[in-house]
Length: 468
Image (cartoon, rainbow, N blue to C red; front, side, top):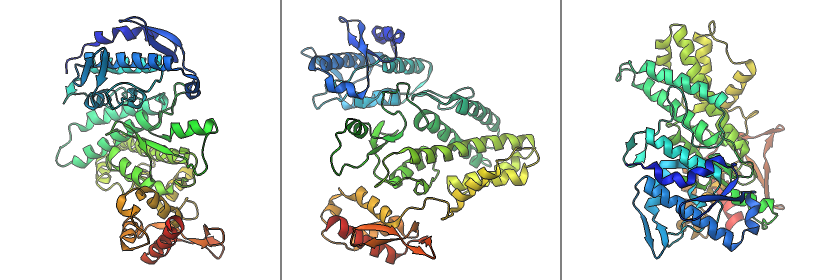
């Protein structure tokens, strides 16, 4: 890909502005600052003239980016510039979350239509990423940037916790250098394991564990509350029956999409972090009742961060103790889920490295054990009715389900495929209030794996309650 950064020169003046400075065109080949962005509420007073000016400068930025990267899919007719879906797809691949495709809102005619301001912060982020592209080799029409190298992490999101992650990026770079001489066949599992660590560290640092640079900006985390829903909540315009809405960033699609169930996000994470299973049902979060994504995000961040840090630290401790071969043998079967792998890493440390390594505190080990062993007394076990309701929400718009007039074996099959054998808190139905409450035995919540009878009983009841 031929890159010509001179095409972006007219936007470089914005690098001297404050982050919230709004860019407008100033003639054919310059931009000027026109006020400052005051957050989502500013949209309420934005005039048609202001929206048009915002669209014009965004159009010019897209044109400049197309010229800088020699992209197809841009055309100009009658003084109007249009952009194809393929053009926007290419820019998303190059710039990732820095691009913010949704802020342009290309309409059916290929024109920018959002009316949203273009801030200096966004311009700076795009120019920085473009400059990174010059130094990085191109692959299959996209810009290739190493997620983790020997000294730093790539930067594609908001504020990062450099003090937390940068040292581990450096350590991981050293590990990659040291294991490069291993037998590629005999030690393939070692390469595969640390590739997973690399993917997980990149995900933590660049996507999920990030903060706003601008308090008024949308949450940049890859797992967040829907900004549109939060805006309506902020201005008091929610309607009766509106439910909290959540989003996650799909790196393959290059955009935020609705979070419909924790199962969906668990499947996404499985691939995003190198096929590592995380039991999100153990988080203190419920799709149908939680009004904030934070508990789910915290569960993901805490577990992934522990997985990365313990794996890297244990490598160096094993190296110092002369037990790398033992550690590499452990990595052949590190555990089933990520929670379990964290616990096993601590157990390996206690068994083989306790003399030369400062272990986790007793409290930290107990927390790991609670997570890995799913102690129903101490973990947030999902209620059976909530699990079934979540699945109905997820498949509610599928035509086959929409056409169903009564509970039948087809619906039961879907629930059994998802839930049979899954440990849940058993609840009981109160027909007077149309609600579910805990089922207690000897004063304790009944918790057990779901049977076919459970699924048929609760499934039919909840289907009738919701749809009949």
